[in-house]
Length: 394
Ligand code: NAD
Image 1 (cartoon, helix red, strand yellow):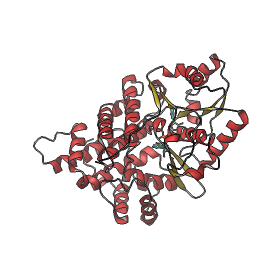
Image 2 (cartoon, protein in one colour):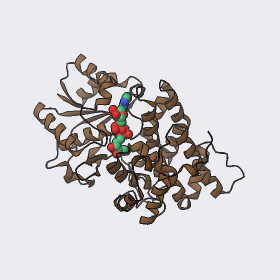
Image 3 (cartoon, rainbow, N blue to C red):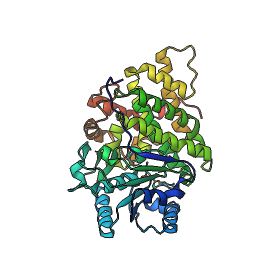
Image 4 (cartoon, protein in one colour):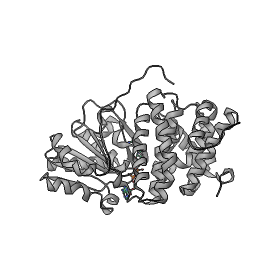
């Protein structure tokens, strides 16, 4: 745990079923005169975008929709969206969707008030000016992008995922309506829920954790432990959806100031080169990363086992810690994530490149165990062929 730390969340949060109906009121409060709505084809098709345009139309607020965002959004989408916002005179951005849409919306908001190119701001604390007002409406319960400092963008030409991290990149308002997540299909519910879990867990055991983030991580893990399976198998279960959206938001409040760990360090190159959905790659890696990290924080892994319902009575702390890995393997299996890295084309000859690129991530420095390149390759190897190690029940 760190000694000195700063904790700051400038984003206001409106949370609850039906809060989306107040969108027009929030736009007016933020002095928005024309709105750029940023989403993707999936949320348009699911009818989610209509739930935003209706309150705007009812209140005579003009808007234009940019709904071309693709998974692992491209830097070029930020350029296109910015051009549209400039042409149409938009002064407020509403992002609606998963992390891909929200990250793009945030980056467009940032570029409305900062000169140059979004590439100029890759890294942490590189941005000079506060973004234009951004309202983030999450429709997956996973990334927590609605209140993080990060926009994760893809430079598709060179196959690299880069991150812009700045307090000025945090949305003005996170408008979180759990009912918008009920249209999520089970496989996306599962993957995004595992992403939220990875956020809470990696933040909890890492070296930058502090009492505020620890409390948030524990709360998020408890909620995910109780609700992720239900949200996957009963998509219409309002209570499970409510709890999962809240859990992903709370997990984001935890990791926003602590960063994460090796799952996320490896997820960037694996996502960029092999197009593995972000939540899926985290779910594949997490048990293997936990196994590697146990000796860096045995006590906390033992606590995680208890949070996930493992019986640790009579076990040594180390034995209890191992049970945390068993619990997460079981959860991953229960929510239907059976893929391995090799299913996505990852082969032995790719591991040098993946490990070298992962080592550049800021998430490595805070990981509880300092890895070598060979360690990172071994984690990937374990995630390529993990079936023999599964000890979970059917
Ligand atoms: P996503 O945004 O790519 O969405 C996945 C799919 O779900 C899309 O096809 C989308 O149309 C669909 N979808 C979303 N909401 C839906 C709904 N309610 N009904 C039906 N379909 C719906 O996936 P994601 O996992 O939310 O975001 C991943 C991206 O976020 C990655 O680029 C990742 O790197 C980034 N990320 C950002 C942060 C951050 O702090 N900014 C944190 C973690 C991940």
